[in-house]
Structure formats: structure tokens, C-alpha cells
Image (tube, rainbow, N blue to C red; front, side):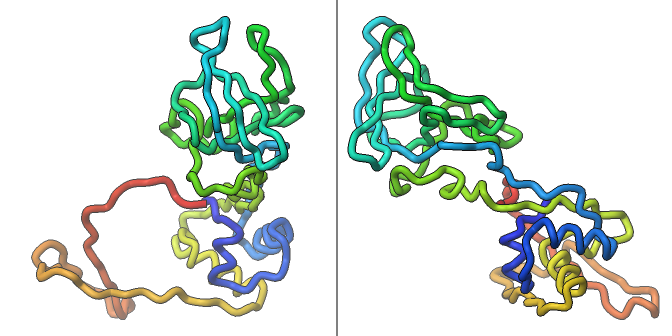
Amino acid sequence: MKVPFNWLKDYVEVNIDAKELGDRLTLSGSAVEEVITQGDTIKNVVTGKIVEITTHPDADKLKVCQVDIGSAENIQIVTAASNMKEEDVVPVALHKSILADGTEIKKGKLRGVVSNGMFCSEEELGIAGDEPVHGLMILPKDAPLGMDIKEYLGLNKSILDFEITSNRPDCLSIVGMARETAATLGTSYKMPSFNYEVKNSENINDKLKVEVNDSLCRRYMARGVKNVKVMPSPG
């Protein structure tokens, strides 16, 4: 199970770095298989706004773009992507940049026109999901220009990958791992507050019933949840 380090710190006081925490938790019995920093290999990729798009003089499928990266002068990028338009903000890999898979990007010419780098997709940044979006990654228009993409997307943050055994289902959540972390470090733990207000008149007993037949189980609760939209986990 992958646990974002910063998210964990929302619920428990942690005064050591992610690697040391991983070592401490492993010694306490909660095995950390790996401490991941998604954007470790990414270098020199920034946010940029496309201010002008023209057709390449010698290639109909290529576009020549002038890009504002927050510096004194715009830079020129030649691209074959087609899902962008003027005023879009996109990730820009500059000269001598490195992508998530280790590919180095350098200034060069595409069909005789200078390109000072390339635009990036989610896949090239190493953040594509199970169903990757084709084309460039389009960022919110209010993204600050020239900002390191790792900082903007939070790719410089650590993720702890736990091996949760079948006898520890209590650890299969951020809250469970926060409680385990607090016990390991001897620090304070903050239980998140929940609102259980029911906003409809349906009776849960009409759909789901719980019966406790064991005196050793003092309480067992169940709640029905519907209209759930399956989405990638945050972090």
C-alpha cells in the first residue's frame, strides 16, 4: 500500500525524514518495501504558456510554438502534438532536461526549425494512470510560469510503499498507518473528524443488516455507500 509521506503527517507528528521513518516502521513490524520519490530523475522541466502557434514551413503535422516560461524572452518549441492551443499552460522540458524515464532532452532542429526543448505528456513525467491521456498534459491556466514541474505537481514528495500482511487490516488506510506511526515514534496522533449525518430518508435496515452473535465482539457497525465514483487515489 502506498502512503504519501506528507498526507501521513496530517494525522501524526513526524519529525524525521521519510527514509528514516521507513526504517523505523520496518523494525517495528510494518515493512516498508520502498521509499519512492516520483520525480527523482526529472530535471529542468518547468511550466510554460503557449503564446503563439504557427504551422511549420516544411511539415504540415508540426507546429512552431512561442512559449512564455517566465523569463525575459520567450522560447521556441516545435511539436507534433495537436491537443494544445494558444494560452494553454503545459510542462516544458528545456535544453539539457531529463524526463522520468531518464531520457535527456536537448536543443535541436526539427525539419530545419530550432526547438529549444519539448512539451511533456503525463507519461513522460511518469504520472500516467492506468488509462493514460494521450497528448500533452494541459495544466490549469493559473499555474505560475517558469515553476519547476516537480514542485508544482508535488513530484518531489516521498511515498512509502508498505507490505501489509493479511493479519493487519487495520493498517490498510492512511489513518491506520498514522496510528501505527504514532505508536512507533511515541508521538501524538490526530484522529480525523467525521460527519455521519444521513441526508436521506432511506432506512439502512431495508438493505443491510448486521447481527452480532459472539459475546467477544462488543460492537460491529456497517454503513451502506452508493453512487461511488472510482478514481485514482490522491498523492
